[in-house]
Image (tube, rainbow, N blue to C red; front, side, top):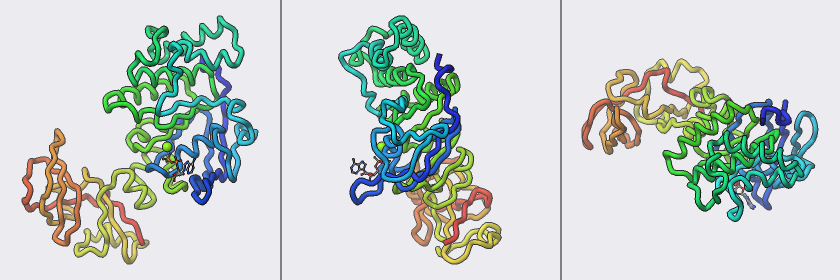
Length: 342
Ligand SMILES: Nc1ncnc2c1ncn2[C@@H]1O[C@H](COP(=O)(O)OP(=O)(O)O)[C@@H](O)[C@H]1O
Ligand SMILES: [Mg+2]
């Protein structure tokens, strides 16, 4: 069914901006999306993700820039004319309508014939594994099931673009993982161009073909999951992608020459960053003497909070149990260390 949806070849955002009075919520977003791509808009709360999505949907007018779909301007069109599918965090279902009527609603509004509605609703409910609950009401469903209804309601319209705003945020951890896989499976099956907003880097990495990382309304980096995971371009991006350890170059210890001085662009007050899982007890390179302060059990290893003699707190891992107060050396392989110039 939705394979025959009006396929989108190219969605282009050029300098898309939105102000709220003195607040610039979105500041010059430029992005070209290819049909079938799954794009994640990622960043901390308040960075402008929902604003970007609402501008795309037509729920908010732009204050600058333009959006074109296959060369045709859409930012001047009202939301209903754009016809994008939306899935929100709070599901936004009609409580008084059955599941099948919720899913059928948009088709009815568009004047689709009765038998076609029946077929399409059935197919959409099959896709999200909810055929057996077609006659239930939203209040009788779990959060995960309600979100499936919301997804069915979006895909049944065969939209050129699906927009999702933190759709899994209201679900508990286990359901969130299940629904994440479900969304990935649907995208693989239907190939619908999707823009997915989240503040969860793991969710973004696992779902998206490309990530757009934002801060204060501005794009910080656009790239594949592998690029953002391994090659963040700024300390902000690195921190957001899990490089929790920040070591200022002016601190009283220095890292092995290889990393610090071989990079000729690094001068003055640079910082080195690494992931907790790469700063390990027993790794001899770039070793630092630290005192263990907190030990957390994490299955195969222990996550440590440690402190250097100069007072810097770091996160590291150990294969063996340690106790607060223990003095150990933690080290990081040079290729696992990111160095940023000032
Ligand atoms: N309707 C509004 N009126 C005023 N300020 C708003 C409005 N909507 C969002 N903002 C502001 O714009 C910024 C971005 O918000 P938002 O797009 O909701 O961020 P995110 O979805 O990334 O958490 C925030 O500073 C927020 O307070
Ligand atoms: Mg938001």
